Amino acid sequence: MEFDKVKTQSQRIRRQRTWLFIYAFAVTCALIVSVRNNNDVEASMPGNIKISEMAPEEFPEYTLIAADENTDVYDDENVAFAPEDGMLAPETAETTINEDVVVVAKGDSFIGILTNMGLSYADATDIYTAYRKVFDARNIKVGQELHITSAAIGEDEKEVSVSSVMVEPVKGTRYIVEKNAEGIYESRTEQDQLIDDVKTIDGVIEGNLSVAMGDAGVPLNVIGNFIDIFSFSVDFRRDIHTGDKFEVRYERKLAPDGSVVKTGDIVFAALQLGKDKYELYRFEDKSGNADYYDEKGLALKKNLDRKPMEFKQARISSRFGRRFHPILKRYRGHDGVDYAAPSGTKIYASGDGVVTMAKWYGGYGKYIKIRHNAEYSTGYAHMRSFAKGIRPGVRVKQGQVIGYVGNTGLSTGPHLHFEVVRNGKKVDPLKVKAATGKNLSGAKLAEFKKVVAKVKASADQEKEIASAEDADQIGQMIEKFE
Ligand SMILES: [Zn+2]
Image 1 (cartoon, protein in one colour):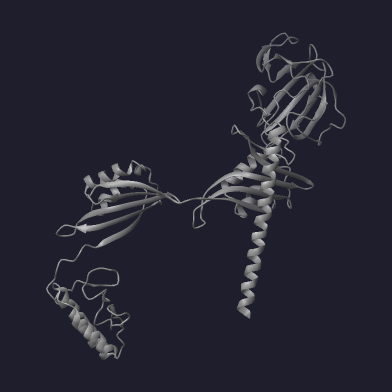
Image 2 (tube, helix red, strand yellow):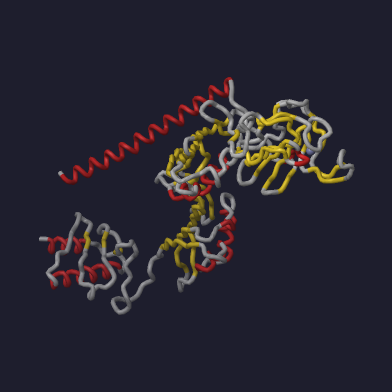
C-alpha cells in the first residue's frame, strides 16, 4: 500500500540538521491532507518520494521532493525548503540563484544595470573589465538581452553577487563573463557553427519592385543590392510594369536552430520585364574582384562609359568647366568634355537607356540625348550623322553605335562633345564612376561556367526539397485521415 511505503521510507530518513523536522512535519501534514482528501500520495521511484496534490489551503506554496533519504528537502525549483514564521523557528535560507534576463532600455549602461541589481560598483567594474577582452559592454544596444546569474548575499540579502553575464548581440555568438573557482571574472566567446545557405525568392511585381520584393520576404539590404545591380540596365520608374517578375538568390548564414544570422551576397538576380529577360550571376575572381555577368560571361554594364567612342586614343581637346570659347571669343562654362577624333569615328551609347532626343539642336548641331535611369542622362553633340534606327523612344545598349563624329553646330573641327546629366544638372563626365565590367574569357570564363552550373544545380535541388516537403505534408495529411 502506497501509504505505508511513504511512511516506512520517511521513517528511514536519518536525522540531519533541523531539516528532518521540517521534512517530517511536511510529510505528516501532507499525509494528513492526503488522507483527509482521500488523495493518493505518489511514491514515484524507490528512494525518491514525491508528495503532491496537497490541498492548497493547507500547504500553499511548496511541493516537497526528497531526492534521496540523505538530502535536504527541496521544493520543485530546487530551493531549500524554509518554513514560514510560526511553523518552526526560522532559519537562514540557503543561497537563491537568480537567473535574470535584463532587456537594455534607453539610457541604460552596462555598469548601471549591474549596480541597479545591487552589485557593488567595484564588482561591476571588474565584470566590465573582464568582458572587454571579448566584448566591449559599452556597445550594448537598446532591446538587447543580458542574461545575468546572481545571488543575494549578506545578512539582509540586499547585496548581490553576480556569477555570470551572457550577451548574444548576433545570434549564434555569445559573449560570456563568469566567476571562476578563485572568484575572479573571466570572459570567453561561444560561437555556434554557422551553416552556409542560399535562399531563393521570386515573385510577380505589381507596380513597384521593392514593394513586391519586400512583400515576398526579401530582406531590405538584399533589395537594395538587387536594385544596385540593375540600376544601369533598368529604369525602375519606366521599365517595370505589373506582371513583370523578379528572382533573387542570396547567401545566408544560419544558426543551428535555422534562424538567419546574416545575409550575404546575391549570387543570382533575374528580372523578367515584358519579353526582356535579364539573368545575372555573381562571379568573384582570384584577386577578389566580384561582378555580375550574364550566363555567357558578358559583364553587366554598371556604369557609364566616360569615353563612348570607337577611337579610344581620342585626345581630350577641352575639359569640363570655364574656358575661353574659341568661336564665341569669350569665357563661358563648358558643360561637357570634348574628344577630338577623325570625322566618321563611331560614337557609342555611354550606357543602356532610351533615346530621348535625336535632332539638330542649335549650337550642338546634330545631337542625341539618352536617358539611362532616374539619375543619369548623357548627351552627344556635333555629330556628322546618326546611326540607322536611332530616334526618340528607341532602347539602346551600352556600346551600341548611335552616330558618327562630325563638325556640326558651333564647332571648330571634328570632335565629340560629350556631356553627363545627373539629376538634371550637367556634371563632369570624367568624374562619373567609370564603367568597370569586362567580359570574362579564358580560365576565368571556365571558372565562371562552373559557378553558373552550381547556382543552377542548387536551384534545382531547392525546388526538389520544396516539392518533397509538400509531398511529405500531403503524406502526413493522408495518414491523419486514414
Ligand atoms: Zn564641347
